[in-house]
Amino acid sequence: MENLSGPTMDLSTIDPQLIDQFRQILLGDVSKLPPFALDMLRSMGIEPPVDAAERQAHAIRELGLEQNVKDLRERGYTVVRNAISGEFADRIRARILEVAAENQARGIVTMGGDKGPTGLTVFRLVERGRVFEEVAVHAILIALMTSVLGHGLTISTFTGMIRPKGTPQLPLHSDNQFMPAPFPEWQQVATAVWYLEDLSAEAGASRLVPNSIRHRRHPGPGEGEDRAIAIEAPKGSIVMWVGHTWHGNCAREIPGERVTLHTAFSRMHVRAMETYEAMPQEVLQRNPPLFAQLVGRSLPFGYDANGPSQLAMLRAHLATHSI
View (tube, rainbow, N blue to C red):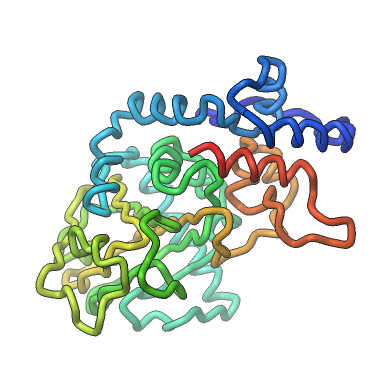
């Protein structure tokens, strides 16, 4: 897996006053940073805004995602077919089923139990297996999410859904939860669903209303149902939509279980649905620096009596000025 954030360094060796001085420099014209400053930023796992847009564009080209980015911007959704191998999809699916079994053995009952339109749901998967750590920093996922949410993006939820035959359809809704209308022109959240089997309408595929991003509000009861389409795609595909898009899923009408992974991200200023304060340090250390940002461990929020971390403020400032 490519390390998109560059090498790391021991931040405990950096004088806090130097970090503060560095931040003050960056509050000026960041386009004129000398090479040593860029190298220092990358060694901290920080994306320098001076070439962030260029590197993001390069990643999109290298991955062949130009049309997908355009679709997200203009239609509010996209499909990356065969984004991952069948073997990787099987590993994700197997671990979701294992986590569900572990939760049931511990007496954990989630919202809706296992009878609602989302089926049996498992949350906080980032901390439930190495395979989900791999998903979190997957190049395609990060490139597409960054194109929508910028370099300061964080994980909101990593959720698995297990929907057996007879599970009803999920009504249309927007993922801009708790957000009043009109929605802003720019996106604050986005969701990617990983298809872990071939999904048709009968198998319980996701469904959505194309171009519903233009409404910039939540759908009313039953609104858009006559325009919703099923997103049928093969195993290993990623179906992604932005927060403004009206979506739901189809009823599961055939035998077996529809198992999917739902990875939702947000801009750093939006409160995440899941929190990972207890993430073990060993997990952070074995992943690229970007991973710590994604699980919210490098955000500047939650001041104590000493105020914000200078390094966290620097990282946030640069990320929000990158795209």
